[in-house]
Image (cartoon, rainbow, N blue to C red; front, side, top):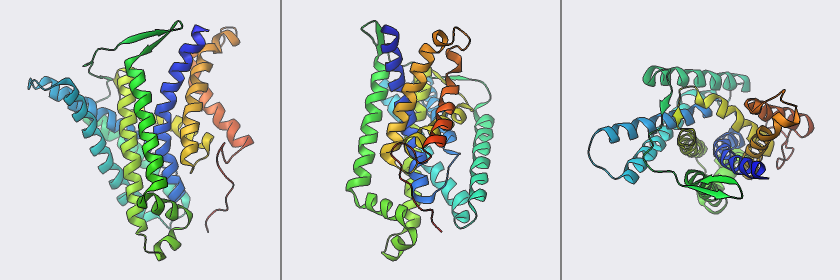
Length: 309
């Protein structure tokens, strides 16, 4: 029972992170029907920027409070990723808006590779440790361990996801997003600046990705130029699982994928007689993707829609 509870806690933490990254995929797809495969690399940039800023401020000897250093690192990551998201949309994707979808897809993969190599040139190939500025408090619950960092990750993710739902459902910008997603042409005729809405969608998704990147690097204590690739693929799987284009579906898919991966890793060894160990947990994410695409391509909360002409 203690193993199950521990893996359940780990799964909720991972699922919260997957959900934040999946939201960027699903928002962009909902408006442009584009799979932005460079989104995972934005999480990587956010993590590396945060680590660099925190390291620089800590080494400066300015005597700044720890909370302020962490806040400045997080805000720097968010700002850099927001600018990066806007730049990618404006330079790489907007000129291809009316091009065949394959061209945009190939461009997204190309942007992903470019960002990986730029990060490698700036920060190098080595793993960078996340500075441990705050002590981690541990709580024993039914034989499982819950840390203050895990609690912070889950709570912050819930706050951000709730805020996004309120933004989309209750604000003027949210109505403009939904209108653009339904029909960009008609939305434009109704006076909505669709280019503005699309750019802000990329910026919003990039901000969430930056927070997720900082969470991942803080949780594992490391940041690396290649860390966004696998994370991005898993978040895309979560978006497909929940129903890509559906914001609530991305949240549900992220949480479910985190739970499936974590619980599966905890019991995979015993169920296979030691043939497959916990290090095969990444296989579960893509096995789920195959099953979902085979049985329900629209996802758990997705609806079958007619493609735009």
